Length: 419
Image (cartoon, rainbow, N blue to C red):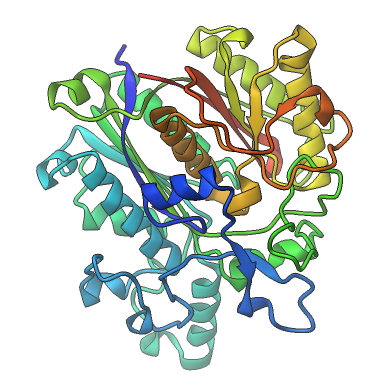
């Protein structure tokens, strides 16, 4: 069984579009959440968003988009993209470069790619309305591949000439966690030598606003305090978009080519609540089993975990369920790993959340810091039993877990260690 390591990271996020920017934001608790013009409407009760800087993808005409000049994209490829695919492309390009890989390393039968996104609501609505108004013969031929849930997989697989395993994962906020778990299996089993995992979301009005109808979003108009995981004053999550990519490789392959290694992925667990299409199981039952499975698969004990990057989206029910799960697995056994939720700074990236937080976690492993949980002032009931750190700590740790939970009660826990 091959050991699996992380050799490349790419970030297009609210807190930075490079590894250095992301690290600086985490170390200094610098939030990427801002007042968002797309919510400037009296009928919209929310006001803030984790915004993507240096990109403007508001137009439905891709040729009007602006993005950093280092990402050169030809017109034909650009015309088949939705905003999140652009973000995913940029993140994947950066991750491949960070890993020191060449075209031939990516385009071969031993390298695959798994992606995670919910598709593009804004693009889908636009194209369907155009089709109804003008008819099929006057509509965009690439409307489907530019908008539906698999759009990132279609476009990136063809553009990067991926010849190994490819698949797009859609399981709400656990999507990219499932993609990372599946990529781990592909490499550990020897079916693939290398996998690229990409998560991305549009993070625009049409992407985020539907959650307001569920009463899931924060109504707090202050960007600095709207996202406050584990705090009793939390009133909903703050959405965000962007793209994050991770390159996973068999350790012997990475070592043989002299790759720099961020960390080693050593296990995962997944379990469903079997409770509700929308709400978490109140006692955190599915997450408990996912964490316990992850520890068993990684062949470690609860006392071996130094840090947990929690899902904790800043929703009362979600945070409380995870508090109960962490108390059950760790606190009741007298174990107190450091805990934080980086969503306080980034916002909640939906199907991209798992890969964003996994990438943040392995970056912290490599660089010797543990991200703080910003805006944690008044602990939610039960949170006082956990070692939630309100500020970033300079500390080298050995092992960590990152959790994700999504609609339908999907729970994924991933385990990484220092390589």
